[in-house]
Length: 391
Image 1: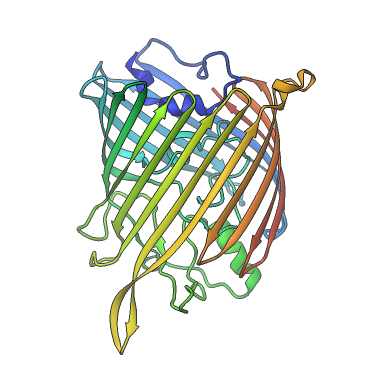
Image 2 (image 1 turned 30 degrees about the horizontal axis):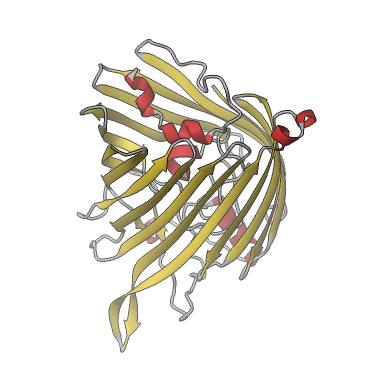
């Protein structure tokens, strides 16, 4: 059934080798399929001073218009700190299948940059309770200033799959509205270092320009916002893509690119390059990504404004070990260890360790602890327990 093509094969594989039955219990042969995921979490965080429960529900709707066109949409429903229900459109797009190997996509979609954003950010697929440190928080806060958020935008994309011997080659390209300068939006005034830390924790998609971050030369680091909108602040479009080689189900290695003008005149670009790896063996999963960004900005040189480029880089590596495969008495238990670093601006380092226990192939209880060392800011330690489920 073509409906299955809207769910990437890599996503299903990333859910883990211990899963032996269909991952989406709601899958059917009808035109409409209702799937999704959700989670309930208790978290205690030092810097934010929080100690609370949270919950969210994320339904995904899949609709087959005909054999050539399929529609998909995802909503995230959760509660904010004031008890108000917040709903966000994660993506809503239509796929047109030119043939078995070529797909055209239009609408709001998850950009094919790296593997985490498009393939395994759902909480029941991500082995950690938290989003990797180089990405913006998704359903939680984080102390590290991220390289990029989970990228989604409005535009068009195409995917081509090639069979090369025993390997598959995935080629994704996209064009979207693109980023914009955060300076165009109202910013909250913040009085002290503690409030600065809180602001960054709860506004992770792009750091807030308070006493603007500086690079190694003392220049203010430009602020860019990646929130998807139905408008564009300039006439330029963001573009990019990803190419990956996979020997399924054991290994997939990819490289990604993103570029978009973010100022109103279309003169200042942000560029991002990434490399990702996903290794799956009988007893372990190893995942990781490296990202480097170059952000243009106007700086004063010899009493003239010229365009200069500011760079950052960061990476994470996550290992999952199925200890239940080795010790029968532990059942479906796994240990997760993750390390992340960001460099040059807002340097930070994070270690995370967790223990997961699968109640069934789609329900998992996760217990985790993370320790984040921020070079020019308050360090953070946090503990969390999460129940995640897919359906």
